[in-house]
Length: 448
Image 1 (tube, one colour):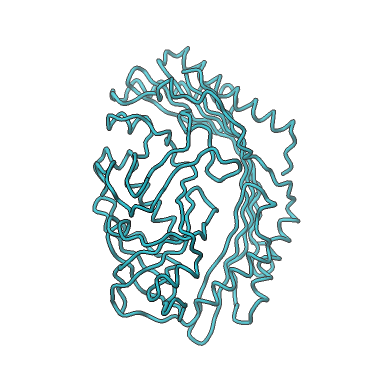
Image 2 (image 1 turned 90 degrees about the vertical axis):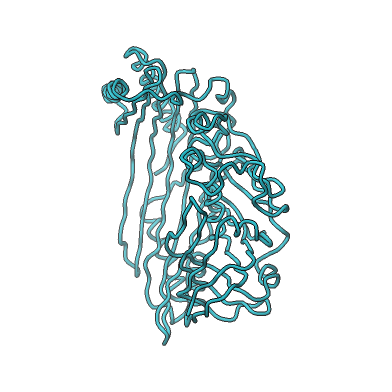
């Protein structure tokens, strides 16, 4: 798993050469424009369960994707090899496809003047020189910490460690070439607790681009056990309207629904509850949501998007008002707008928080439901209707009283966004969307 500087330089040279060959072949085949991406990656994945190794996999892969344009006709193809012959075959296949596709006036590369002219080093590449036997010991220690923490932890779904490193290149016929090397590592544990009322499962995980920033195996195991134990002997609730506090892990999903509703594909298909919402106040005035793509070492950092367009820090929601949509070049053209450098998704989407920790948010809520797990996909992105199974805890007087299960949380996302009361500083930094817990006023709880 160790990657030397020499190997890294070789990988970067190989993916760069691959995309250059692809563009050269595309030009010779008569394409009026073309784009190509190539990647090399490797990794190690291990799962241990009840003290035994359940799976152990070494990964090493390579891939190429190419898109060519014949005027407004588009063809795409891919290959799992980076040899010159494989690249040539992929490009020729894409050219053949382009000959038979319909013309699309919105098809084409992103505008040349939007390409990233400078590509800063965002410090994203931190490989973990981990051998299989070391990884096995880490997962065993993680699970053992959970199993030994309390006699009510009776079973395990396992502890898993994953480490990944890769190098990719993107180039297009505007003359743009960008090469990125990155890494990501994670450790998780899932265990089962049991008492006279039955069994409950929960988990915890840690992830980072740097292995040194992962939580310790013992900490991950103990947190998974604590979470499972806290869910024992759950009660049901009667149907009611009540404030709901979404944990930081779940609040990321609410932000994800917002992104989906203002993304180009949903908008030009008119399949969003936030059509024509730019300039509209969709959240309370204190809410500020923004992208910050150039943060060193962050999970979603990127100097350019999937089309080579330069990324920059920008507001999505300011003082509760939707400032822009989330667009790549194709969806932007469909809407008569310009790309927002979001081909491939958002980059480090963050929200400003109140100066409130979890305990402060519980006190602010006073009485209500603290949601820590959501089940199912009952979301209608056209209407915004929201209905999902949930589990968590009932809160009275700002204190957790007992666990709750087998209920449904329902409302409409427009109302949910408008009724945000506070956002905590307990920010979950383990992904591309980062937020603290969200306190929402008056949602419907369907129970007994």
